[in-house]
Length: 130
Image 1: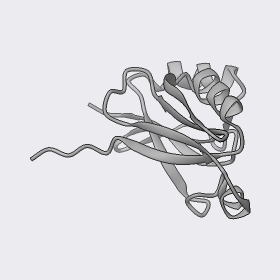
Image 2: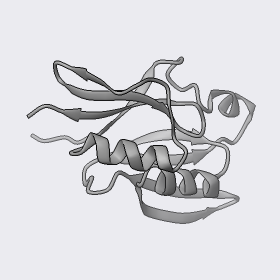
Image 3: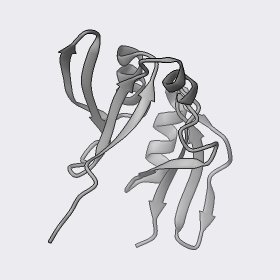
Image 4: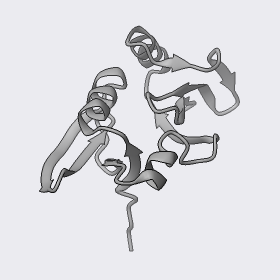
């Protein structure tokens, strides 16, 4: 048996601004943007070259959901963007205004630095050692 985690929902305030951020600043690909009617859309984005998992960008529909934007993991790093070239992606993201919360550091497992997306969610940019 094989199972795959295909999508993780990320609550956002605006579809178009979220698409612009994830495809622009983070370099993700827009995989799908389907109008579901009544102001809802099915929006999927994923890192370049990712073929098994991605993000479902879901617009908050009430005050409870809006309160969770940017704090879906209680302030912890909740998302891990693994790359094959840390420094290339770090330079590109920094050049596009992505806020890194720390200086990149070498760990036993690889190079890592925490950054924040436009909503305040914390991510690790990570290149694992071979």
